[in-house]
Image: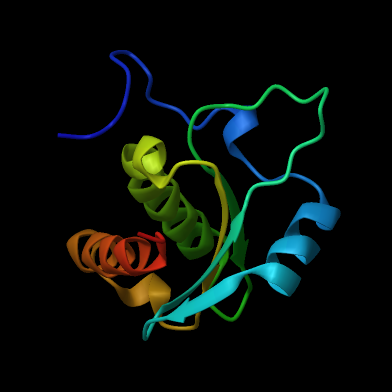
Amino acid sequence: MPDVRPGERRLRREARLRSSRDYARVAREGVRHRSPHFVLLVAPARRGPAARAPAGARLGLTVSRKVGGAVVRNRVKRRIRESFRTRRVRLRALDVVVIARPGAGALSGAAAEAELAELLARGVPS
């Protein structure tokens, strides 16, 4: 059963990493987990005192042209966002960056979901 509120089918702005400063911090401080088609970077979330701290983690995506054309890259991003969205509440206050490697676009939806689920399970500190 996914950890999503009824009617909530999108990844809201508060649930996304948006600044290059956030990406750089996660790359610098985060722990890396690798699979054949994805790299997962996980770091504890740091938010300013004035920021509204959302429940759950925030996601950043990096999908380069090495993965494929625009249609393929967008499909990969949709699959990553959906996998993350259904698990977001369980990931607590973490910042997560997923980097798609070449070949990620050739995965079926089920294969991509399984690989991302395994990576996210490894990336969550106990």
